[in-house]
Length: 293
Ligand code: R5P
Image 1 (cartoon, rainbow, N blue to C red):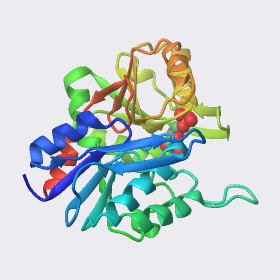
Image 2: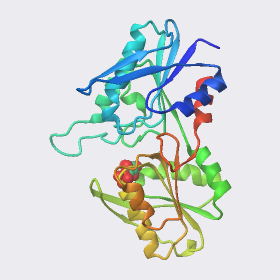
Image 3: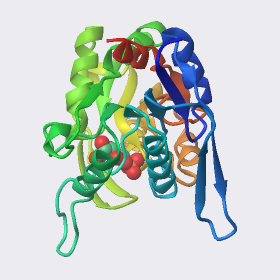
Image 4: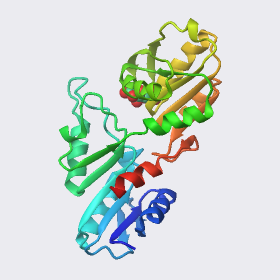
């Protein structure tokens, strides 16, 4: 066993077991006690003195988790850990990357400042880099960004015949383009306008020549699913019925998964950066490779 301890914080046990088995890490245990007033107490049960420590945390619905994450990191540091690395396969708070309306702040900066204070390094997968060209613009610690594109392309090639990829908005063009190239498949991008959290309209480009293709809608985040639902509705109006919705980060707020299912899509697929029953694409090997370097 080497000098690294890896902990799961919010139910990431399966991935932690696979990573520790592959890299000969020690799988640490910690307890999070919630007091009646909802304050938390973290107890580290594994020796961390002079060790490199990795915290793997699924950070969807982050507000309820962030303070426990910080308590864990600070407790581990106080017990003498040498370095603390955060693996957040889904990196929250990236979408407020500018002041959209008067009176608002830029939360992505504040969140980055917070994480940079408590961790020595961050590893994440496909963060929502839209207006920030890279994480180093806002994070003060070394960051490593992994990409799901190749693994998604492999999944599509093994599971979908005659695919055409569809990006639901301009931002998605960056990864749809890479996956399409990998598959030597055609791709198109919709024009999207957002008017509110759940209020989205999109314009579909000409698709007549692709009528017999299987449409694969790909987005980085599915949250309210409004973006996906609008794109699916546009396709249905054009009598397209073979539709797969694929998201890297399956947030699926409220009953959005059911709403998307109710549109009659063929498939809803996601990567395991957030625990969800649509997880079909496993990115654990990418994490292992990154840690092994
Ligand atoms: C846009 O900025 C993102 O790439 C996603 O399109 C967006 O987060 C999806 O959100 P929702 O599912 O709420 O429409």
